[in-house]
Image (cartoon, rainbow, N blue to C red; front, top):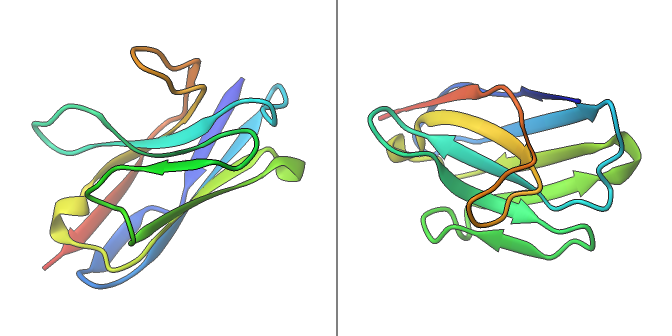
Length: 116
């Protein structure tokens, strides 16, 4: 199983980025998928998740600014990020099966840097 994240980069505050994660090795249409992030010196935190039927959850810090979506035909999950803030700077990781205390699969991270 491989999860390949892409779309990170450097953006000014107020800007937008779209992260994508393509999964291979098996089909994940029946799994919840999510995005986590880890800022320097901080613990990894859940940013957003989407269930197999499209129900979504967002951390309070990103609610109204980030949108998670999935494309089951392409075995992919996306994170549209708008109105980015410097505090959104982190390495972002996609994940399969996020639930309290456990993730089934982690992707490699993609760095998002938001300049002020």
